[in-house]
Length: 490
Image 1 (tube, rainbow, N blue to C red):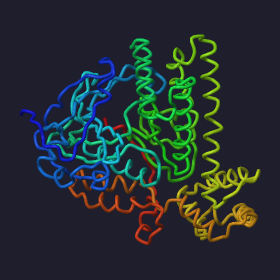
Image 2 (image 1 turned 60 degrees about the horizontal axis):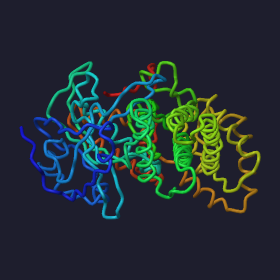
Image 3 (image 1 turned 135 degrees about the vertical axis):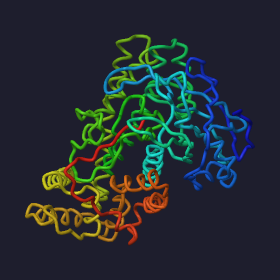
Image 4 (image 1 turned 30 degrees about the vertical axis):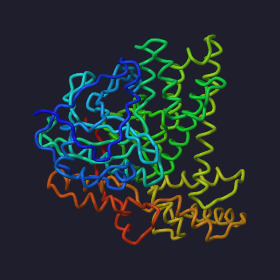
C-alpha cells in the first residue's frame, strides 16, 4: 500500500520541533494498516483546532488518522528521549508513536498532533509499535474527563480501529489514537540531551522550550533558571489538582512528565474510590512508588532530575549552579501545598484563610481513611449537606467535626449559598469510576458496542453539573475480593 498526500481537511501544520538538531528525532512514514475504521471522534476538539469534522469522519479521514495517508504539510517523526523508569534511567523514544506536526489553530495556538500506536520506530526496543483498542479508548475517556474537570491534559481527537490483531497475553484488536498536546517535550527529553547530546544541543533545546511554552521569560536575567522555576510552578499546580480529585497517574516516570504542565500518558491510571493515601492500581507498581500519597514527592524527584540536566546552563560555576537548582526545587513544596490547601478550602466552601483550616481538613481526611469512605462521594454529600447512612457520617467523631466545620463557615462573610456554590464548582459529581470505565471498554472491545462509552463520555463532559442523570454514575462498584488493577496496555 502506498502513502499518498491527503487533502488538507483544515490542517495547518508547522514543524518547529523538526528544526531542532537531528539527534532529537527520526523522520519516517508510518507503516499502513489494513482496514482503518473510525470508532470515536471528538468534534468539539476538532472545531477548536480548525479542522473539518465532516471530512475527517469520512473513509479518507479514517485513513489519515490511521497514518495511511499523510496530511499536507505534515512531517511525521518519532521523538527521542530518555527516562527514569521506576528510578532507573533508560534511553527511550517514541516506540509506537509519530508526531505528524504542530497544528496552528485559527486563534494562533500551537498543538502537537500525534498518532499513538502507529507502528514500529527506531526507538521501539523490540516492540511491535502497535496499540490495542482497549487502552486507546481508555486514554480517550480519561483524558477527556480530566479536561472536563479543569485539569491540564493532553486531549484525544480520535480512535481508529486498524482491522489488525496485535499480540500481547492474548490476541487483541489494534487501534491508533490521535493525541493532541501543547507539546511532547518531557523531562526525559532534557535527560536525553544531557546524556547523549552536546552542550549546544542542550542549550538549543532549552531555548526552544522557552520560546514554545514560556515566551514571557524574555531575554533578560538567568533565562534557564526561570525555565526551571516555571516548570516547577506548573507541576506544583498540576499535582495539587490531581490530589484534589483523587487521580492516580500510576507511572510517573520522568519521560511521563511534560514540561508544559499537562497530564500526559494515560497508561495504568485510575481514580481513587475509598480514600487511602497508599492506593495503588498499577500492576507493575509492586512497591507503591507511585501511590496516591507519593505523587507530590515523586514530582519533586522528577523535577530534581530536570534540574540536573540544566546545571551547565544555570551557572558556569558548578557549585553555584547546584545552589540555584536546590533553591528553585525548594519552592515546589510550598507552591504545591498552597494550591492544595486553597483547593481543599474550596471543597469545603471556605473562602478566606484561618490558621486552623489545615487541622479541620486533616481531621476529615483521617476519618475518611479510618472509615473507608469514598473520596468523591463524601465531598459530594458535604456539598449538599446531606450525609449518607454510612460508618463515617454516623460516627460521633464526624458529628463533632461537622459542628466545627459549620462554625468555621459561619466566621466568613460569604453566605451559605455562596459556600455551596463554591463547593459545587469544586467537588465533581462524577469521575471516571473504574468499574464504569471497564464496563464501557468491555462493551466496545468485546461486542463492538460504543453506546456505553458514548453515554459515559456525555456524563463526564460536565462533572460539576450535579444533574439527576449523573446519579447512577455516582454509585460505587459492588464488593469484590480482588483489588482493582490497571495495566500499561503497551
